[in-house]
Length: 217
Ligand SMILES: *Cc1c(COP(=O)(O)O)cnc(C)c1O
Image (tube, rainbow, N blue to C red; front, side):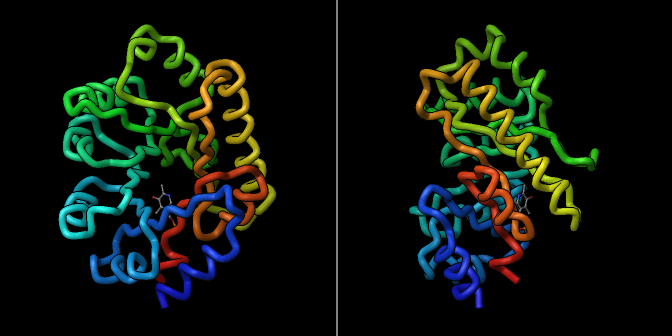
């Protein structure tokens, strides 16, 4: 069933949209079913769960960290992580840059924005991001690459609310692109959309969707 679910999502994706298969809470056996069906990009939201999967699973997988990241855990994922979606402070960005530098890597990251109604969700405001991007600390970083933005909509059946929040994320992307990344072609990703709302997210400009339960149900 995992294979069928995965392929039915993949088949309907526009070419410019990348699927991150969110494997959290699923056993290696189950995640391997998605791997065997051709999926190579997987997302986990907790470092403790990501590390054993990284150890056990094939090394051609690209792992994305999609959940809140504590600075003291960065060193464990820095050697192999393909993208960190959840940069929500300058402190975290400084630590990612520091750990990447030790490894002579450049780690692609996304700035996470808080646009949902729920206070439980992490993320920056537009002003927080502007402050980070104007900081001297950021300007000297050589081992991170900010490749775009990430956000989560409110968990609600009100699809107009969800759509408006995705529009807000896209507007933030556009503004940052204009004001800070106009000469940087790497700044192009908008990570938004999960199992219940990825179709709306794609309509509103998503380039990366993070889908878990719809694949691994
Ligand atoms: C769990 C999770 C997802 C996937 O959610 P589903 O509803 O299972 O598709 C996407 N993004 C983040 C940050 C998550 O924690």
